Length: 167
Image (cartoon, rainbow, N blue to C red; front, side, top):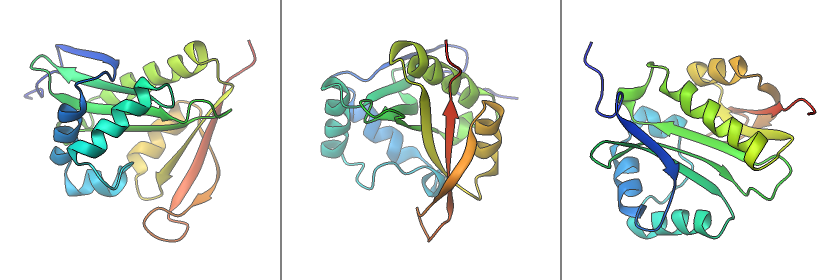
């Protein structure tokens, strides 16, 4: 098995000024299927990605990215609107990283940030019902289905929430 670039040598960090171009390239490289399941932004132009990065710089969101050794983004994961009691989580990876456990590694990191750094009591997310791999991952981490939402069609998605135990 050939591992994708960055699988053995990668870095994870908060988005910073200058990351918009790499983030825009990441969204351009997502497959049609990945875009079907993961599309947090309708506009992934360079200008739109500057706005995404700015939301992290302004403290509205907590945007993170995983970079390979060449500085290319292979995963973007975030909490939107971190001032909310239960901020919304998003996580996306390039197809070459699917099925290798990288989503679990990044999700674990993000949940630790939510619980300990942001001191949240709960985390929410929305997942397309047909994305069984993601639902399995979220369930494994303790998320439970709390409702339905409309993403591509009426009630095509689950709303899920993870409640952290009291300290």
